[in-house]
Image 1 (cartoon, rainbow over the protein chains, first blue to last red):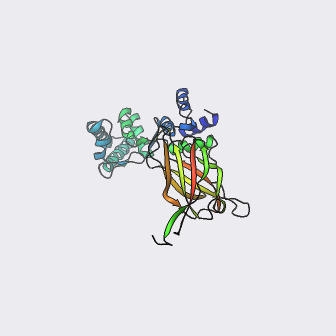
Image 2 (image 1 turned 180 degrees about the vertical axis):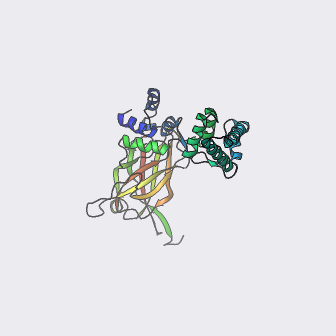
Image 3 (image 1 turned 90 degrees about the vertical axis):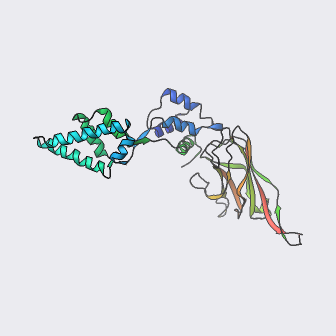
Amino acid sequence: MTPAQQAALEGLAGRTLLPAELSGIELLLNPEDRRDDLIAAVLSAGRTEIHSRMTSSRGLAELYPAGPAGAEVVLMKLEGAAAALKTSSDQGEKVLGSLIGRQLGFLNGEGLDFGSGALRGMLDQFVSLGILTADEVAGLKSIAVRAAPVPVDVVSRALNIAEGRMVV
Amino acid sequence: MAAGDPIVAVGTIKTLEASGAAVTNGSVVQADDANYSLADDAASWPDAEFLLSAAWTTAPTEGRVVNLYARPLDIDGSADAEAPESSRPTLFVGCFVANNVGGSATQHMPLQGLIARDLPRLASYFLHNDSGQSVNSGWVLKVIPRNVIPSP
């Protein structure tokens, strides 16, 4: 593998490729049978992206990794926290309780966008406040995470440029 | 058949590339053994058939194609058109549709639609591999002048 090929592939992967990955890809670079599809699969392993995904409480039961029962536990925790915090004498906790209750209202209606940075940040806060566990929040956030494979044609283009087969 | 009825006539086959280098997916390569001149190679007939004989070690995706591009030459005195690139064909002539067969078995592919019409007076020809897999070295591109003429 030439330095240009390696740089092109690492640029697509967005990371430094491991020695085992490089040696595996080396075998796929024969111009007579360059396997851009398999190289793309190597580069795509573990790649994910956060996307916008509106989900209601009904959808939550379907999409939550721990299933409907797990989703129900999360909802019960949030409802309990909202009710308890609203009765607090602390103004900040009252606001938080109201906020959770309002978000639960949205969740029961049109849903919430689990890809929203604001919502994901709020979920992280719930861990530090002891409202939800880290695993529960990770499960909620995973609803808006999907695979982000590197397209084969993108690999072809990058390698063709690196190999001098394509001029842009 | 009555005299004067239209019949298909073909000219002498010309090989534009006798044994091309491997073509990786997405790249564009020239069939650089010869250009094709309507005046010199085709009795000034404007149409032709193209034939690509190529093989893949790994089977291409069924129905994906190898595109045929032309680069018109001497379009303004001795000035040529730009050489085609994968995202800018210069002049798209047609495409060869690949079968999903690998194992280096040669596929003989006519141009989709068979006939390339109104070709440039003089041009060099290029393949753009959009089949999803590398085309093996040794591919061959031929052109056959074609016309419809009155029967004798």
